[in-house]
Amino acid sequence: MKTLMFILVIAYYITIVIKSITTIVKSITRLLDSISRLKESLHRLRNRPDGNQDDFNE
Image 1 (cartoon, rainbow, N blue to C red):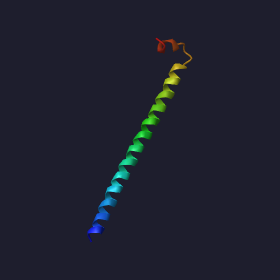
Image 2 (cartoon, helix red, strand yellow):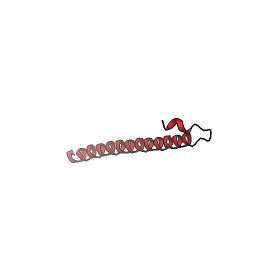
Image 3 (cartoon, rainbow, N blue to C red):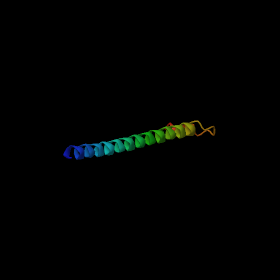
Image 4 (cartoon, rainbow, N blue to C red):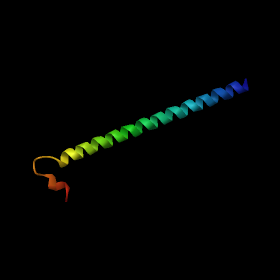
């Protein structure tokens, strides 16, 4: 009976670790997605055809 409880406790902790790892991976992918969106918007700002490109180089 003790070994069954031990196995259940270990399985519970393993599921907690897996859930936390998936949460960390989701947040990292969200962060990388927002960084790529920020790079795209900066690229669009630099390539505006209205002649204000020199403002970013100062």
